[in-house]
Length: 107
Image (cartoon, rainbow, N blue to C red; front, top):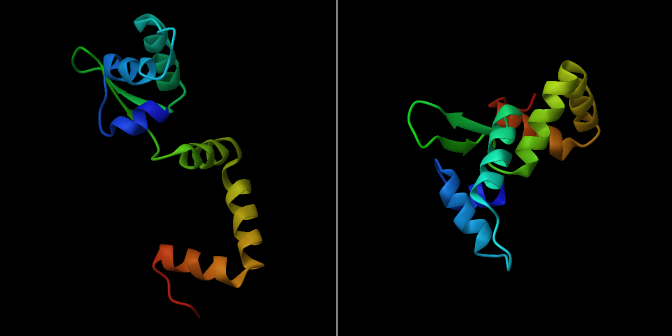
């Protein structure tokens, strides 16, 4: 994922392979990187565009924190949001930042 984020925008397997192999003594195989990227697409960590070849991929979130939050929300849904809001209520600064992000004014 770090390689995908480093490139920015849609990427193809060959670009990610070049980034990864630029940091390794023993190069990875194209098929290894392709398999991992297809698995990440199956898990919705990467978005794959199948309209043309080669397939292009984009990260589904801008960073690892975004992916973690998305996964928690998908797994735990409303319970996760409720817990997050309840925790935020104990810290006025966090609550104010949340209100600002939501475009709400402070009561």
